[in-house]
Image (cartoon, rainbow, N blue to C red):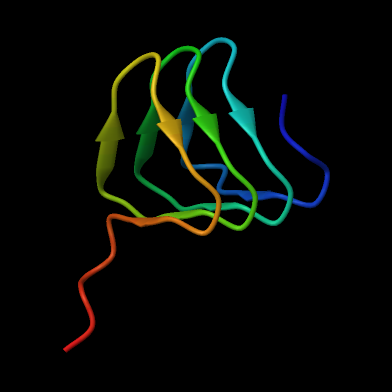
Length: 68
């Protein structure tokens, strides 16, 4: 289930049963395994691979370079 307010790249690969919350952003070259949940406002940038049965909490940022 992908919330209508989420932005998911056409180049992302989402497994079965993936849930993406409102205002989350899933970038290109991201792979989310089956039954992974992405919370509201979370951002996942690629290249990133996340296996099955994970929970990414709201406002998390995964795959981006850390701030200097």
